[in-house]
Length: 128
Image 1 (cartoon, helix red, strand yellow):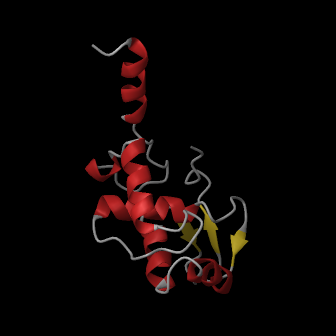
Image 2 (image 1 turned 30 degrees about the horizontal axis):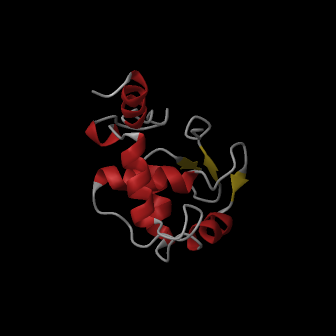
Protein backbone atom coordinates (compact mmCIF):
# COMPACT_ATOMS: atom_id res chain seq x y z
CA UNK A 1 0.00 0.00 0.00
CA UNK A 2 1.36 3.47 -0.91
CA UNK A 3 2.38 5.74 1.94
CA UNK A 4 1.05 9.25 2.56
CA UNK A 5 3.82 10.83 0.47
CA UNK A 6 2.68 8.85 -2.58
CA UNK A 7 -0.90 10.09 -2.17
CA UNK A 8 0.21 13.72 -1.89
CA UNK A 9 2.13 13.33 -5.15
CA UNK A 10 -0.98 11.96 -6.89
CA UNK A 11 -3.08 14.79 -5.48
CA UNK A 12 -0.50 17.36 -6.62
CA UNK A 13 -0.45 15.98 -10.18
CA UNK A 14 -4.23 16.11 -10.39
CA UNK A 15 -4.42 19.75 -9.29
CA UNK A 16 -6.32 21.89 -11.75
CA UNK A 17 -5.18 25.13 -13.33
CA UNK A 18 -7.34 28.10 -12.43
CA UNK A 19 -9.06 29.72 -15.42
CA UNK A 20 -7.88 33.21 -16.28
CA UNK A 21 -10.16 35.83 -14.75
CA UNK A 22 -11.02 37.40 -18.10
CA UNK A 23 -12.29 34.15 -19.62
CA UNK A 24 -15.51 34.82 -21.47
CA UNK A 25 -17.27 31.51 -20.81
CA UNK A 26 -16.12 28.93 -18.28
CA UNK A 27 -16.98 25.34 -19.26
CA UNK A 28 -15.43 21.85 -19.36
CA UNK A 29 -12.51 22.92 -21.52
CA UNK A 30 -11.18 24.77 -18.46
CA UNK A 31 -10.89 21.53 -16.48
CA UNK A 32 -7.16 21.12 -17.04
CA UNK A 33 -4.82 19.34 -14.66
CA UNK A 34 -1.22 20.43 -14.31
CA UNK A 35 -0.12 17.11 -15.82
CA UNK A 36 -2.48 17.50 -18.79
CA UNK A 37 -1.31 21.08 -19.33
CA UNK A 38 2.33 19.99 -19.44
CA UNK A 39 1.61 17.12 -21.85
CA UNK A 40 -0.35 19.31 -24.27
CA UNK A 41 2.28 22.08 -24.23
CA UNK A 42 5.00 19.54 -25.05
CA UNK A 43 2.91 18.28 -27.96
CA UNK A 44 2.37 21.71 -29.53
CA UNK A 45 5.67 23.32 -28.51
CA UNK A 46 8.10 20.41 -29.07
CA UNK A 47 11.28 22.53 -28.83
CA UNK A 48 10.27 24.60 -25.79
CA UNK A 49 7.32 26.63 -24.55
CA UNK A 50 9.20 29.75 -25.66
CA UNK A 51 9.67 28.33 -29.16
CA UNK A 52 7.37 28.13 -32.12
CA UNK A 53 4.08 26.32 -32.32
CA UNK A 54 4.15 23.06 -34.30
CA UNK A 55 0.50 23.36 -35.36
CA UNK A 56 -2.55 25.19 -34.07
CA UNK A 57 -4.82 22.84 -32.11
CA UNK A 58 -8.33 21.99 -33.28
CA UNK A 59 -9.64 20.84 -29.90
CA UNK A 60 -11.00 23.67 -27.80
CA UNK A 61 -9.29 22.56 -24.60
CA UNK A 62 -5.94 22.38 -26.40
CA UNK A 63 -6.49 25.84 -27.93
CA UNK A 64 -7.09 27.27 -24.50
CA UNK A 65 -3.90 25.76 -23.09
CA UNK A 66 -1.81 26.93 -26.06
CA UNK A 67 -3.30 30.44 -26.05
CA UNK A 68 -2.72 30.75 -22.32
CA UNK A 69 0.96 29.98 -22.89
CA UNK A 70 1.23 32.41 -25.82
CA UNK A 71 -0.37 35.19 -23.74
CA UNK A 72 2.61 34.97 -21.37
CA UNK A 73 4.74 36.53 -24.11
CA UNK A 74 3.03 39.89 -23.59
CA UNK A 75 3.76 42.34 -20.80
CA UNK A 76 0.90 43.49 -18.62
CA UNK A 77 0.33 47.23 -18.49
CA UNK A 78 1.93 47.63 -21.94
CA UNK A 79 0.12 48.78 -25.07
CA UNK A 80 1.12 47.31 -28.43
CA UNK A 81 0.32 48.45 -31.94
CA UNK A 82 -0.79 45.88 -34.51
CA UNK A 83 2.68 45.60 -36.03
CA UNK A 84 4.22 44.81 -32.61
CA UNK A 85 1.55 42.19 -31.87
CA UNK A 86 2.12 40.60 -35.26
CA UNK A 87 5.91 40.51 -34.76
CA UNK A 88 5.55 38.68 -31.45
CA UNK A 89 3.01 36.23 -32.87
CA UNK A 90 5.01 35.57 -36.08
CA UNK A 91 7.71 34.04 -33.90
CA UNK A 92 5.10 31.66 -32.52
CA UNK A 93 3.22 30.60 -35.67
CA UNK A 94 3.00 31.55 -39.35
CA UNK A 95 -0.73 32.23 -39.13
CA UNK A 96 -0.33 35.03 -36.61
CA UNK A 97 -3.71 36.54 -37.60
CA UNK A 98 -5.50 33.44 -36.29
CA UNK A 99 -3.51 33.59 -33.06
CA UNK A 100 -4.34 37.26 -32.60
CA UNK A 101 -8.04 36.68 -33.20
CA UNK A 102 -8.23 33.75 -30.75
CA UNK A 103 -6.25 35.61 -28.07
CA UNK A 104 -8.91 38.32 -28.22
CA UNK A 105 -11.82 35.88 -28.52
CA UNK A 106 -10.68 33.85 -25.50
CA UNK A 107 -10.21 36.99 -23.40
CA UNK A 108 -6.43 37.11 -23.11
CA UNK A 109 -5.93 40.27 -25.19
CA UNK A 110 -8.09 43.29 -25.80
CA UNK A 111 -7.93 46.03 -28.40
CA UNK A 112 -9.38 49.35 -29.38
CA UNK A 113 -12.30 49.18 -31.79
CA UNK A 114 -10.14 50.56 -34.63
CA UNK A 115 -7.53 47.83 -34.00
CA UNK A 116 -4.58 50.20 -33.61
CA UNK A 117 -3.84 49.35 -29.96
CA UNK A 118 -3.72 46.00 -28.16
CA UNK A 119 -2.96 45.02 -24.57
CA UNK A 120 -2.89 41.99 -22.30
CA UNK A 121 -5.96 42.09 -20.11
CA UNK A 122 -4.74 42.71 -16.59
CA UNK A 123 -6.47 39.66 -15.11
CA UNK A 124 -5.46 37.39 -18.01
CA UNK A 125 -1.87 37.02 -16.85
CA UNK A 126 -1.70 33.96 -14.63
CA UNK A 127 1.39 33.07 -12.68
CA UNK A 128 1.90 29.35 -12.18
